[in-house]
Amino acid sequence: MIQFTINHTTNESLDKIVAMQILGVMTALKEDLITIEEAEKVIFSPRNMDLFKANGGSEELLNLIHLGTELEDVESLIPHALEASIEEIYVLCIRFLRKRTECKIEEHVFKPSE
Image (cartoon, rainbow, N blue to C red; front, side, top):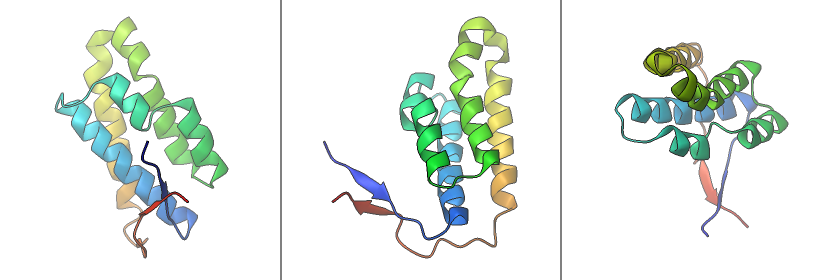
């Protein structure tokens, strides 16, 4: 298994990195390029919420990850609402990133695990 870590210098840069990841996953879901199960493996899991919180992630992004963990329930219980749920997370993520344009990522994000 190949492993790497996310390298960030501030909590704000961590937020921006994770928001970009969420945005990519939401775009792939909107375009039917990935499944909800794959999205859960990439970002939308309680485990990832715990990791993100333990590393100083913002409550606003924790909420977005939490909304993503509920997509499977929406799909199975109220499938007609799935598209709107995906769009809601997508829009909230764009808004989050727009508020953080001043935050700059100063270093390369990925580095090999030691």
